[in-house]
Length: 177
Image (cartoon, rainbow, N blue to C red; front, top):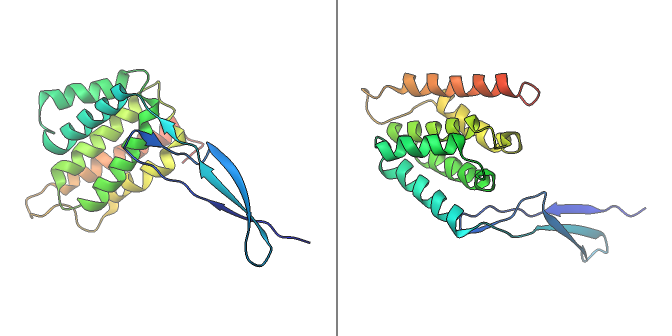
């Protein structure tokens, strides 16, 4: 009996190209020992220049102007606009990277959680496909041992915000979490 080994390669880039594990082509190769190995490579998914520009503007506002009126308008746009579904993997990766690198920056963490909340509120986005990528970072903002740099940072407000996000996800999608 021959055993088959399967390896899946997946990546996510914010450079107008996105590969997802569900969009794969299959190649069959053999290792030195003669056991067949299936390698699944993602198919490149190209987003429009307009969506790439939108993503760049939103991420710039999150990083540089989280207290601005433009940022608030951007959050409303994220929560209501149709056609943003192709950007969800990009936003998910952006949130993941920023949360991991910036646990000391309370303002940025709040901006990221507000971004996630807006995406969750958008009725045109099927967020259940990306919850497994977003939940660890939301929960990190809830249970991280240390958030912020100063003693005066109100990390409890961020933790409460994160708990409310998790509660809204559980209420909206009870079969996932």
